[in-house]
Structures are given as structure tokens and as C-alpha cells.
Length: 393
Ligand SMILES: Cc1cc2nc3c(=O)[nH]c(=O)nc-3n(C[C@H](O)[C@H](O)[C@H](O)COP(=O)(O)OP(=O)(O)OC[C@H]3O[C@@H](n4cnc5c(N)ncnc54)[C@H](O)[C@@H]3O)c2cc1C
Image (cartoon, rainbow, N blue to C red; front, side, top):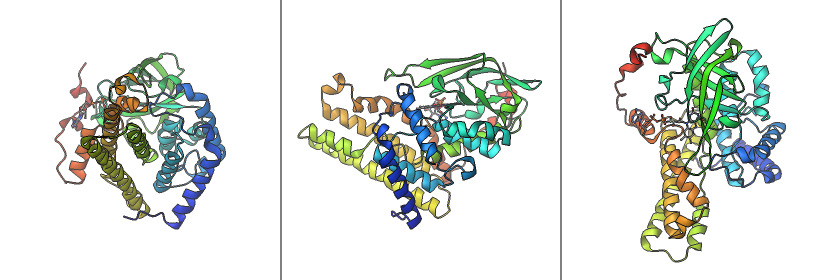
């Protein structure tokens, strides 16, 4: 593992750093860790426009589509610099990290013309309409149905945990178009205009008091066939493209926590007993592990290799780090922990969600068991049976 940037990476980092230092004061240290971006929509959309104007809106998109033409290493370096400077993630993370790459890889030239530049400049914010009440870890079990009527598809079903759907103009949507084939083969990928009649977005209030997620109800929603990406029934491969890109876009950027902040808090809380000091050292160890895991992924990518289980291990490490950091921070606060409402309380409340979103801890451990330990995949006959034999009714 090489912890140093190559000369080319060092130049890229310097460029990113110079740009962020000079242009980011408007968004610096804006707290979006809770995921409730709505109150900051205006400023974050303006920031997106500035990124677009200066060529920093999409690090890994090809230059011909308005991206920077970088690879995963440049994406991680960009994310690291944003974190260091205190710049939040893009307001259009689904548009840039998922919808755009899907359209570039599987869409038509007309779709690229219509959607890509609006995604980049923040004119159209996108959401992800994948999860359903019965389809999360097992996403291929989606039951939202789409039937073809002439040049349109008529969609009925329910999505859930749709982040930012209440302020999004468009959504990437998975719907089942064929129930007679195994579950992965009967799904189609659509680009949904959220203003279409029949779309109802209902915010879900979380324990933090904010409403970051939504339930989205689709009642006989008509989607023109020109807003389908890929062939009917090929939606799973399009969805896999989006998920791979989402992971890359977020690479190394899960940092909703800075070790220095915990140390400042510890100093402010005065003398600490041995148990607490020991726990802080443990948090520090996790933080360094995460840093080295990210460096290891960069090294692998830089050498042209694809990281396998490193992403899963890094996600497991990050979620454990945030949970333990919040816990020890509140422990240091003493009784004030339950009356104050500050960043540590917020981290404590959002940390459980980090163990779930983007693949739960258990699902990540399954990946480690298969890819690192070489254990056989869990037997699962639902992968081969026709969907209508799995769920009748
Ligand atoms: C912060 C956040 C943001 C999100 N944003 C979006 C979004 O914008 N759009 C969207 O579509 N979805 C979104 N989600 C939903 C997310 O993708 C799902 O919550 C996640 O995939 C888990 O699915 P589930 O909640 O249905 O849980 P389930 O899949 O029902 O899991 C329930 C429990 O069973 C365990 N489990 C499931 N399968 C296995 C297995 N094979 N082996 C062992 N254990 C297993 C899980 O680990 C978990 O503990 C978001 C979630 C979070 C927390």
C-alpha cells in the first residue's frame, strides 16, 4: 500500500484544493450530516452551478458529457479534499452518482442530450426510487408493476426511504414489467418526472425531527416509453451500474465525523476517567483504520485493480466508528447529553441509519464472507424461480 500520492495525483489534489479554498466559503461547514437538505436547497443548488461552471460537478463523467474525465482515484481525492475543507456532498448526489452514469452507459443519445447538463448544473435534482416495503437488501424483489399501453408504461406501487424525493424533479425508478421470469430478469429502469399525475410523496419524520426520507406512492402513473433506460427486462443491469457508481461517488466520503472534533470535546469536558480515555483511543484506532482502508483502495485503483471486499470492510468500519464516537462523546457530556441538542446528539441519532443505508452491516459481512473467506453463497432458490411463483397475489 502506498500512502503517498503519485505525481499526477498530487497535481490533481492541488488543483482541487485551490479551487475549493477559493470558491467554497458559501458552503463551508454547512451541516448536512442529518441529510435534511431542504432548508439549504438554494445555497446548495447555487454551489452545484459553480461546480458545473468550473468543471468540478462530476469527477468521473467523460469530458464529452461535461465531466472531468477522472477515475475512481480522482473521485476519492476530491471527496477527501471536500471533507478536509468542510464542503458538503453534492445536493444532486443521485443525479450525478447514479442517474447520469446510468444514462451515459445505457441511455439513448436523446436522453443524454435531455438530461445530463441539467443534472450537472443542479437544474434538476434527482432521487432514487428503488427500495420498497418488501425490497431493500433483496432489491430484486421489487413489486411495483409497470404495464405497457402503446407508447406509455402505466406504473402502480409503493417506494420507501426515498431520500430527497420531496424536492426532486426526477427519480430513477425500478418497476417489474414481467412476472413470468426469475426476479432479476423482469425489472425495467425508468426516468420518472416527479410531477406526473398519480405520484404522491409523503415525508417520513425521523427521530431527529427532520424528514429526509419519503414514501412515494405511484397510482396508475404514465411514463412515456422514451423515458425507459435499457431494454424492458434489463433494468437489473442498469441498476447495478448505478449502485457501482454510487459507491464510487461516495468513496472515502462517509466522514460525518472528525477525530479532531472529538478531541476538542474531550478537552472541553475536563479530566476524564480511565475507561473513557480507553474508549477515545479505540475510536482513534477505528478512525486510522478507516483512513488506511481508504488509502488501500486508492492504491489498488491506482494500480488498475478493482477493490473487492475493501468497500464492505470500510463501510463496516465507518458505521462502527460513528456509533462509538457519538456514544463516547455523549458519555463525556454527562447529564448535559440528554438536555443539549448539538452535533453529538445528532450523530448519535443518525448513526443507526448508517449501519443500514447503502447495504446493511449483515449484507456487508456476507460480502466479506464470500469474497475474503471464500465461503459459498447462501442457497437461494428465489433467484431461479419465476417471480409469479414467489409472490402470488
Ligand atoms: C440513510 C438512508 C438513506 C436511504 N436512501 C434511500 C434512497 O434514496 N432510495 C432508496 O431506494 N432506498 C434508500 N434507502 C433504503 C436502503 O437502501 C434500505 O434501507 C436497505 O437496502 C435495507 O433494506 P431494508 O430497510 O428493507 O431492510 P431489510 O432488507 O428488510 O433488512 C432487515 C434486516 O435483515 C437483515 N438481512 C436482510 N438480508 C439479509 C441477508 N441476506 N443476510 C443476513 N441478514 C440480512 C438486514 O441486515 C437487516 O438487519 C436508504 C436507507 C438509509 C438508512
